[in-house]
Length: 355
Image 1 (cartoon, rainbow, N blue to C red):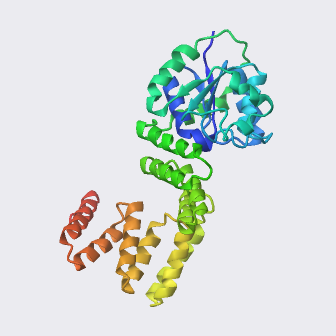
Image 2 (image 1 turned 90 degrees about the horizontal axis):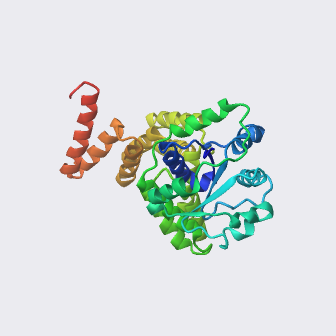
Image 3 (image 1 turned 90 degrees about the vertical axis):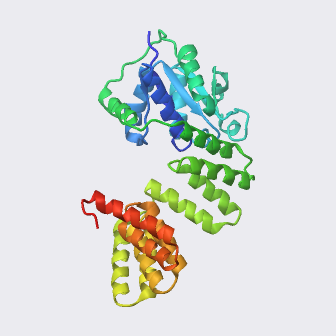
């Protein structure tokens, strides 16, 4: 008798709910497998398929957008589902955000063996009542069963993946609320761009780690003609995913900017620092350096914006704190200037030297 389970999900859609399900089941003594990293095709059969065969339960998270790309034969989610069907696992679809098999985001992708998904006993999982849904999953759906399973020949790779997933921080209620807004945006009409943007924005406000929301919001913004907003969202997404970042090249442009600044070439320095920021949107030093140049040119608002950006990226960045504080002081905003001074004093205290 066994009730161990394999969790299948679309990573860019249901990452946080999948982790929450994994954590809840483990906390209640259920052996469960979750892969939080992409697996290359060479290891797919040796790890994933073996784990599906080794466990009687196959938990499938379905949210708006999850089945997208399942019309492609080599899609990894489709392969997992087909393997579970072929092995006659007990398939338990978990439907979040009112997932509907008949909705436009699902019905076109229920092809081949995936048509059988509508026949399985599914569990609705409202993300704002997550604990109650998990209790029902454990007590009514994951009862120990006598089902023929095939022990995985090499458990070490699978165990490493389980430990990696177990080391992830606990998913919070706020993150699940953010997920609810994210999925609501995905379920909206493909032409409701304003509604999508509102929901993605709320999801990002609640959980800035939900980086996929930046990507989808960039698409909606582009559709409404907001090219600048779309580009900024994609930069945020790309940085979080490590797409197109060139830290070495960014560092080179930052160094060139410093040289140009020292030679009095202010416009050239700004161009170099801006290029460094384009290559690495989280380059704190480049923002602070550009702020110095902008201030030298008399663009106080631009300098203040860049100093603030640097501080947002690193609240302990002393030079930016000093720069922003001095601007506040020059404007007669003594209260803000004093706050900046206090923050710098705290940094000095941490370093063991009180000025």
